[in-house]
Image (cartoon, rainbow, N blue to C red; front, side, top):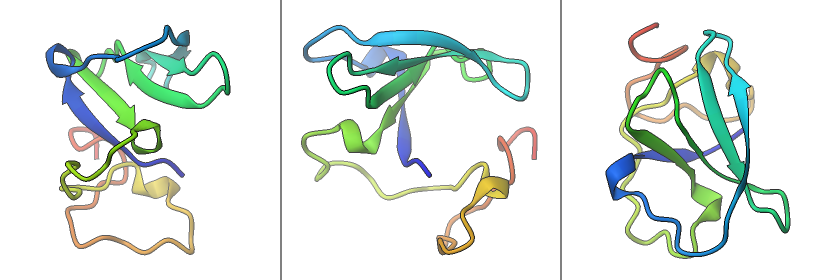
Length: 100
């Protein structure tokens, strides 16, 4: 289970450090880069998504301060929802919104 939010790549700034990254091929066939903390191995963000050009997906747990994060506006990839998690009162998509 992961919780992340999207931000335009032009608004994204890594404050310190250099992540380790690898290219991953999604079920759709699209490539993306997953970026990890080189010290602890935690995923920090995903970028260079062929399916979402110009967008960076930041893992919520990678933030020091979450008080300015806005509430969710949708849930995606709900076909992979863990059975004990509750559905939010926002639009639901089994896959990507344009592929659902």
